[in-house]
Amino acid sequence: MIESGSHFTPGNPHGTRRSKHPLLHPLRLTLFEGSKGYDWHCKYKKTLAQRPHSVTITEFGAVGDGMTMNTVAFQNAVFYLRSFADKGGAQLYVPKGKWRTGSFSLISHLTLFLDKGAIIIGSQDTLQWPVVEPLPSYGRGLEISGGCYQSLIYGENLTDVVITDSCSAVCIEDSSIAVGHDAISLKSGWDEYGIAYSKPSTKIHITRVSLESPLGSALAFGSEMSGGINVVHADHLLIQNSKIGINFKTTRGRGGFIKDIAISHSEIWDTTIAIQFDGHCGNHPDESYDANALPAINRVTIKNIIGQNISVAGELIGIEHDPFTAICLSKINMTMADSHEASAPWICSNVSGFSDEVHPEPCSDLQFNFSNSSVLCYSIASHMYTLLASA
Image 1: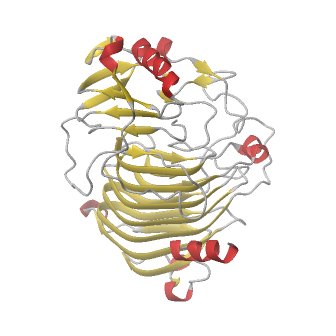
Image 2: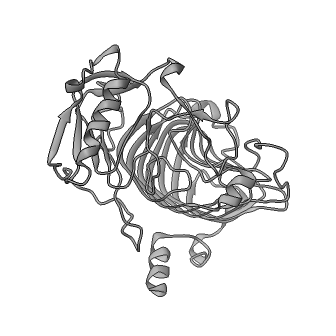
Image 3: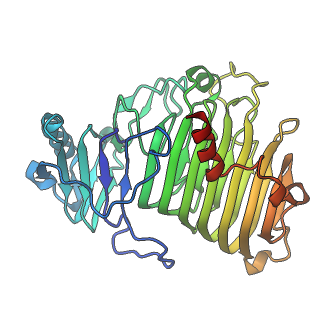
């Protein structure tokens, strides 16, 4: 997590590996402050503003050989730079190398700058990962009673963060992420705890990112979404070599909502399921959840998408008596994998929506005319109109 006022600026996180589809130039993950109007959208800058104070991680004894444990070096560097927070901030420079470390925390007014070829490697030694108290929106720890392991890069008492759970005004940009499970996951609490905490993830912009998730989803919403997820704009994504490209997941008992989502101008390559809506995903923290708390998924627009070597174009499975509505698809062209050309490209139940210029042709549930759906379908233009009308 990165606090408002901080920046995480990596070089190529894959080292010398290059995408075979060079859609974007790595690589910067940046957080900008501001949540009013349209200010939360990413604003491209060729360079970040220089901090008046800068140190190099090697000054604190770190060694970038891929073997040396550098946890204490990172922790000491951040502790030292804390004193510059009210003096214009500071930069922690990480040169080329493989820097193995356990958890360390970031602070406000800090730029963590990774040079090209610099890779931060999370230690496999659990002794390097302190156990922290669970988030209030989750009720208890998932893996161990009472808490969970701290993230690799962590921050506390934060307002704006990257990779979000109950957060607002977030920008994720110019980054390349390759993981075993979900690459980017937007969440907002788990069942009755998330409902009680009632803090949605909202006003999130994701742009110019490359995502790869062989065992999970490149971009995931939920399944823990009980506090709500809304007003998310994602564009210029390159998704490749993934099990699922774009995934909306929830289940009975979650409550909450996922709505007002716009995903556009993106490419999906070599992926099993390009688009998935799953209303039967995830378990529950305990027996106190309300089985009658039904989630609402509506006003999701996906447009201007190109897919290549796709096994299933879309699998949209809503919840009986609680269908997903206003799913709007436009200008989507998927080329199916040779081995799946005879299979049904779209699978749908308990969903409804609109479509226009979609290939292969979607399910009948989604074939209502897109041009007559302007009131029901979410768009950035309609969002801006609402902002102006309420000003």
